[in-house]
Image (cartoon, rainbow, N blue to C red; front, top):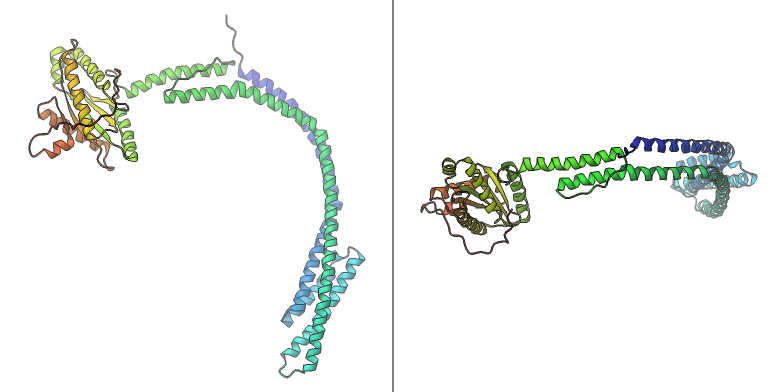
Length: 454
């Protein structure tokens, strides 16, 4: 008696329980670490961040004060000079400069120089604007402007050094804060390391079990389905769990059913040729490929001569046997890639990729003669002949239904000329005025034939 296979829900239940326990341990660790991180954040927000922001504002205001001084020292408009001097006064008394006495002293000295420059430059611009200005006074003001600009350049160096010191202090405070955060991270790693490690091991074990017993079996089943779709062989080993084993059995049954359905949907049950629908589908694909690759393609319509007489004289069973032998003889002479389809009754069609009209005519005439010979030497069926019409691809605008219709016209012309012959559509059109539709195939090499009997 065979043991019943375990079910996947048992495996998933055990793995879920293990995951819940590990997750609870991790949550407990996270709560403790969150408390420590919260305390550090509160301390930084209450003490460290305001100081850092205060130093950053001071450094930014120093840069603005320097910019206002440059506009006063080098501006060419009295209104602009006054406006920027007033802005410099507002900046000079900002609370952000109350970091220490040294900072306040340098800022006040800077503002005093800006006021002096403003006074001299306003007088100079007013005097320059008068039509009759005194040269002596103008020269005096120009010398004062030059001296004040030189002093301003030195003062800018002091501002730059002060700005660097403030930024350096803020950076040190930030570094100190980052060091505290780093220490907290180390504590977090120390406290939570064990919980995270256990959780990772549990997740790895769960992933391995699911991969082994669920994912891989599904992938194998999926690959088997793709192989079935492509018509390839596949192999599924016995599965451990009941559900995957059921899937494997279903895939096996599906393979059998799909093959049966595919044969029913694409193959003529009597002759094992392609049925009309599937032949037309394959011919459409071959036509598109031939146009894309700029290759030749030919279609041949075949019709057994006087087939109704075979049925009427020998019975439908003999007629069916005749169709079977006929299709086998044609298929054993098909080249590689060639397809034979039964369009209905005793009417068949051949699809010949890479064949031009001359090659198709030679192959068709060869098949015609062999059918006449085989049937004459077969006791199971009466002797038969076949008429054929050939049409090849001539332009990228050619459609399949038009090619089939033209091959059919050539076939009927072969019938009208006495049967047991091959007629090409182009030969039929070219010789319509003379009444002779058959043409002798030119001597031209054929692609290799598939000589294996189907």
